Length: 79
Image (cartoon, rainbow, N blue to C red; front, side, top):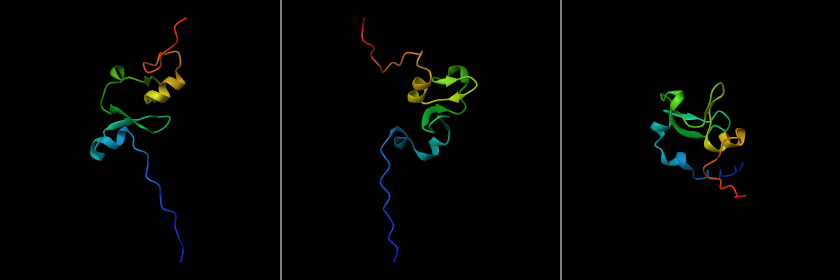
């Protein structure tokens, strides 16, 4: 008899709170594949974390790739 490893439960994240039928209508990050929360039908000029010629990014990937932008979640020390 062959024994299989039991799969571990995936980590809880924000997309787990979104119903599955609504997740298909949301953009995914082009870098990591995470659900971004941006509607697929939203115009690109109104999207946050969108880079022209590359696509839609999640917030984490956007600030890793584009550090010249200031991340609202990072508090920079005052000089």
